[in-house]
Length: 454
Image (tube, rainbow, N blue to C red; front, side, top):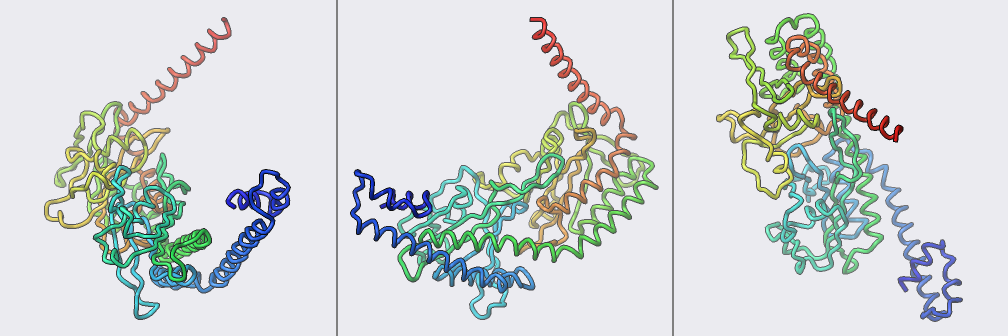
């Protein structure tokens, strides 16, 4: 029967006659008719469900904010898949976790409780990890008939004892940061994870449920992007005005190295109010140099790092920005944040002040690019507010294209002054890089000549 179903799918329904004409066919004529009838009934049923979902799109998309969107889409999942509970988990790579809003029970427009859990590392043990985090790691759909017998069930969950059938679907299309701070959509990265729990009408979820849940997830991703853009539009307009004023100040009054540090700090606090501290490292041929001032003298001292150490050294060499959540707090080795935090070196990187150890911070390390390489590295701490991260809360977001464009433009204003004030450090690395390129070019030409002569 499975072979016949595959044959029907590959021949647009014309495979039944071919199957019956085959002497090796094991199904009788009546069984073939029964299989074909069941297959096309399932296709018709899926078409009806898609039509119902399309009829809901106007209601799902016309939402005033993301809170209402959560409520409506979770309601849609429960009604379309005929299940008891539904959840939509949003990936938050800045904080190294994922969050959702628990569906309010009283009214549809209630906000509901924000639930959070950390992102697991790729080497995490799947046992008792939970179906949502397993789907995130494996990037595949999970369908469970009896969750109580599945070792992946998280026993610490409040609803673990009331969970039987489960369907979890990851939605791909997350954002990643490439060289030079460019944000690109990566279809191999998880953006959302949808969960439907306890099928009512049947003992398990079927392939049509998989398809409908995927469609709902794609629709929610678009609505979420629109809500985030609307909530951030006003603040981004103010930021662009501030950026222009910062550019004017830099171009007209940046006369010494101390002006670079002061104006960079002022511009960062204006663009991202949650920024608590900003430092700048120059990138030399074989090490980085921290630009520091005691606040009283008008001189800037350079503190060499003796090599490319910490997150600063890693960004200087790779030219790829890095964000680390809570560098001052211990992180389990099986979490995703631990991979980047392993490069953190308090001797080089920014350290959270002792008075603020209980707060949550994000440490951002960003390259200053010139002539194809990093001439400096800007590192800054942003305080992270509690709750769900959505829209623009005043903090820098490494996965926000507009934030990265602002950072690129701001740092480009300071790049010529760094090259002018410190030509022996910034220029030396550029010269060394071009010498390596020329050496490689000469070697390549020599090989071509040798091949031609031979």
